[in-house]
Image (cartoon, rainbow, N blue to C red):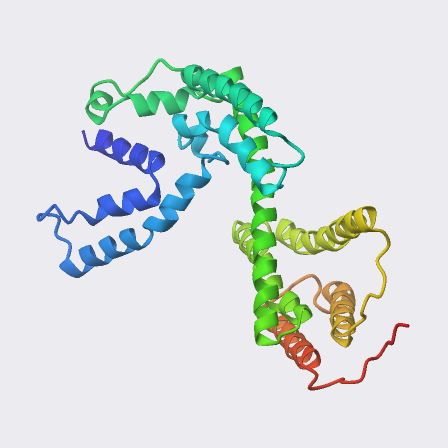
Length: 333
């Protein structure tokens, strides 16, 4: 019986959002749990405070499926709504209506998407058998019949194909979401810079760069803590390389194709400061890591690199605000 109870809690933790688990774990209605009143109040407060994030996350699932845990957290009604919500979100994000797509196209696409949604909802027991088996059994039924006749997701060819399709949809829609969020952040920073009198170059090299690197920082840190330092180091250099080469090239190509050649580009002093610090830092790591550190990076080296970045941030900020290097180094006619 104890093992069955543990299995029930595990399945519940898989099927429910952390907000729901936190709300149940508070157990304010249970006077015999032995927890202090302060702990119960704190759990209840954190659960209520995270409610807006939970609501936003549930709304996002209508356009982007949630993956992982062998498919058990993918919900049937939200996944069935993907053929309708994901294309509509893409059309709205890319501003294709009105303009590129007319009302007739929207109506026709809605009819086709509704048909696909009905197919997914009807075929759900065969597409996601693990999910369907868990969600259909109550806790009491699981104690009486812990096993199920449904095939596992990994052994079902239709499930593997459907999971791959969901992964592709999640990847594509996530890129659209990042494009939308990045556009809004850039607009917000531009407005804040104009209001406060801060240059766009300073905001881009500090606030925007920090926000753009948070995801890479967390991912690389997680990979390094899992015992894969080579992968983490490679990702640290591969990510910025892709941003500089592909990101800058794609942006410039799109601008030149749509508006012609770019002219009168202002070469500000802070850009030269940024390039100089970047090139010097990379050259130092290129020779210091194999010859001075013997491929061993400790606390001293880490603190040194952090101090180098702090020096760059201060120098860049002072240059951007015209406290130092006031005279332009390069004048374009």
